[in-house]
Length: 377
Ligand SMILES: NC(=O)C1=CN([C@@H]2O[C@H](COP(=O)(O)OP(=O)(O)OC[C@H]3O[C@@H](n4cnc5c(N)ncnc54)[C@H](O)[C@@H]3O)[C@@H](O)[C@H]2O)C=CC1
Ligand SMILES: N[C@@H](CCC(=O)N[C@@H](CSC=O)C(=O)NCC(=O)O)C(=O)O
Ligand SMILES: [Zn+2]
Ligand SMILES: [Zn+2]
Image (cartoon, rainbow, N blue to C red; front, top):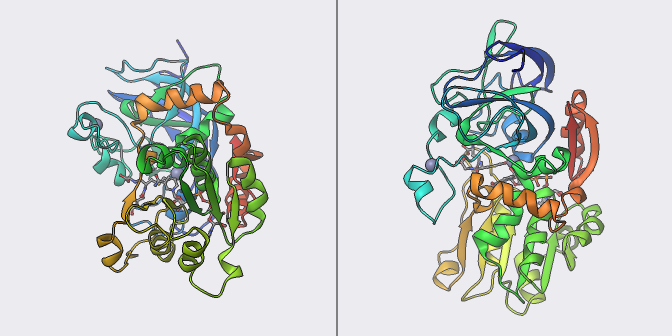
């Protein structure tokens, strides 16, 4: 049995003390897991745009001080009473959408949005309403049920899954959010069909993973749209067949795309988090059957709009969270897809950095220079 079991662990974490501030590397205390909780030692984490969104102060659920992070890979250090799904030593991925298998959402095949701990998770606390982190005498909030920007974290047992130990954690950590989300948006939410035409706004990790999903589904045309043309060369490696930069056109991008595709696309995806692009993506869809999927997360107070006629005439507006994957059932299968060389996670890793350089990872993302920077503890 490990010498840390049942004890408070002091370790390194990147603390967000307030919105818009750089994260600060601090020594924090991590309490032992309570019943139905698991304490993990994270080995790797990456930064998703949603971490930056919450840090920007635009997230209505954002609370500070907080330990952000939700794309991670690690090893179970200890488990609380009643935990049966994982054990110390297991290689695991924390899950921001849990799967309790008991709530009505879990029992429905129509959704992956388990609601068992959603309320407490949104308030930044564990299911019993308390936190496991402290620093300099102050309590720190949890984030998205994961808080992977810490060497050790505590999560609910339904928010963690064991994966094939042969899979490198510095790659499969990406399945905790961005890659799974984009891939599933195409396969599960939109259900892209063979021979179809697709367009994806935002060629970050999420949008590039949509490209892989569209390709896996047999799409014929996959158009990548970004205002940073440096993304186009990279995206050729993710199934994209052609590219459009909205800055190259005077007219609305939906008009450009409808002309380019003989009346519109079969499937479009918004992976930026901009409500004007969400509208353009819907209006770029083909009359009668085009499906537009919102993946990006828009800031507090933002609303989408379009003429209802767009829907009356057969376009469909959808959205996806974690690509529609029921997390505990699906993440181990996605890990196996990586191990079997079907899902090329290594293509998303543009930088490997020590954990202490986490602020650089945010800067690289904002400058459009990284797809994912994987941080090593
Ligand atoms: N629904 C869900 O479950 C999830 C949603 N997200 C959201 O997906 C979005 C993308 O996340 P990441 O790929 O991590 O971000 P990222 O920052 O790596 O990529 C965003 C891309 O959008 C491009 N972009 C920015 N403005 C644009 C514009 N006006 N037109 C076209 N392209 C533009 C950027 O150049 C960049 O390539 C974020 O909003 C994030 O919060 C992320 C993960 C899960
Ligand atoms: N807290 C935000 C909502 C943020 C959001 O939409 N999150 C996505 C995941 S983004 C991952 O990187 C999501 O899955 N949402 C489902 C959920 O139940 O939160 C707000 O309050 O607007
Ligand atoms: Zn559930
Ligand atoms: Zn994310």
